[in-house]
Image (cartoon, rainbow, N blue to C red; front, side):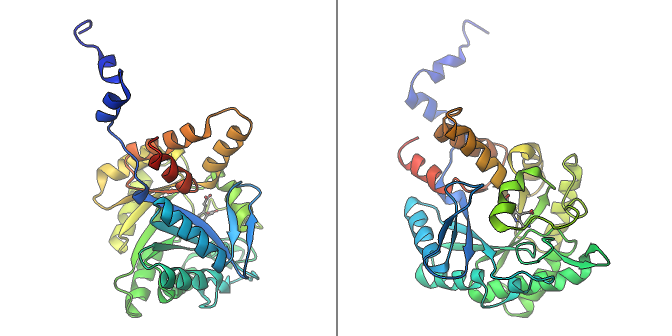
Length: 325
Ligand code: PBG
C-alpha cells in the first residue's frame, strides 16, 4: 500500500513507460481499405472521408506502393462500378474495377496481401447487399452471386476474400465455390459480427451504396447483441472462415474482447468510416490532436483483443510509428 506502492514510479520517464507498455502497434497488422473505380489517372477525393480517394487501377497501384513503403502490408479493395443494376453484375465480372486492380497489384508487388470486400451493395441499383425478391432481400438466391464474386476475385489473384453481406450461409457457399474452382488456398476473412451501424454513413457516400428503400436491419446485427456475435462467429468458423471480423470497432470493443477470449482464430476489427471521419472532423476544427487520437484509437482496438486492424488511418499510423510515436 501507499507509500510503499507508487505506480507513478514506472511512469517517470519515456523509456520506463515504453518498457512496461502492454500493447504496441505495428504496421504489419494494419489493413488499408481502398476504393477502386474504372479509368486511368483517377484520384477523386471522397467528400465524407477527407484524405481518402476513388482510385483507378493505375493510381491505386501507386497508392498501395506508397503504403507498402510506409510499412502497410495489406489492402482491402472496394469496387465502384460504372453502372449498377438489380443483380449487381459487376460484382462477379472478371473485367470489374476490383478484379483489374487485383491483377495489377499482384503483378506489380506479389508480397502485398490483397483482400477484397465481397458484397453486392456497391453494385446493386437498390443498394442492398443481396438480391431482392418480393420486396425483401432474399438470402438463398444471393448466395450464388456472392460466391461467384468471391471466385472472380480469387481468379484475379486475391489472397483473401472478405464477405460483408451478412447473408446466412455465405461463408460455406464461398468456401465450396472457391474449392470447386481450385482455390483451396485462398483464405476467407468473414465479417462475422457486423452490426447495423450508423457509423457506416461516410462509406455509403464513398461507395454510393445507401439502400434505396428500407434499411439493413434485416441482415446486419442489432447493436444490443453480444451473445449473438459469438454465435455468428461460431457459425462462420464451422462454415470455413479462416479469420473473423468485428465491425465497427470502437462501439464494440467488448465484443472484440469476447470473440478474442472465446475463439482461437485471428480476430480483425474494422475501424469504420464514421469512426475515421469523426476524428478527422474534430481535428479539422482544432478540437482534438488527430495524431494522438488516432494512435490511441488503434491502441484501444488492439488492447480489446484485435489482431488485425482495418483502418483508413493505416498510412498515417504507420508513419507516426516509424517516427517513434
Ligand atoms: C458493404 C460494406 C460496408 C462497409 C464495408 N463493407 C457498408 C455497409 O454495410 O453499409 C462499411 C465500411 C465503412 O463504413 O468504413 N456491405
